[in-house]
Image (cartoon, rainbow, N blue to C red; front, top):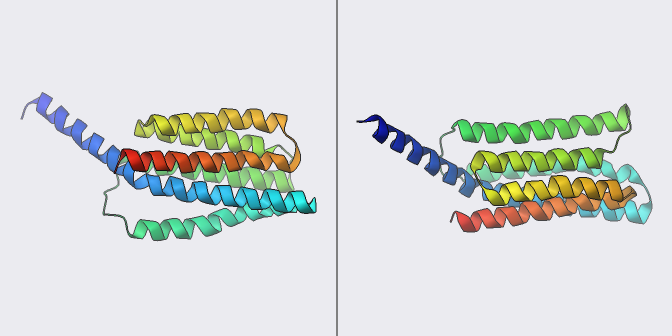
Length: 185
């Protein structure tokens, strides 16, 4: 086998793997998008109606609800070997989750900060990085809109209305998931 044939086979294998990951990831984008949309709207409405920002503690329900559902969804996936791209993708979102939870706890107990601003930026960045790893423009664009648009929105809007940033983020994740599903049937 020539070097050129080897490179072609490697390239084809990588592209097939990337498409499999994209096809499989669509449902997770939709899951987390739906969950983010619902939780952000519930917290917004409860905070708005009661005037109590303590409803923000409901954010911690997202991983409690989402991870078991995602694990159940993953149980029915066709067997797909882990590769460097899927490992990096998982790492990007794990780092996002760790930052989001840690910064939220710090904001609650140690140093008050504009958590909505920070989390929307790092969430947009995590989505953009996922798109770059997967070479997928809808994911890159969705993440950019979320990160940059959300940051501007967070700076302009005060109090509970900032939660609507995450409603937008959820809708963007949902739309991205639907686009991925259509692209990679």
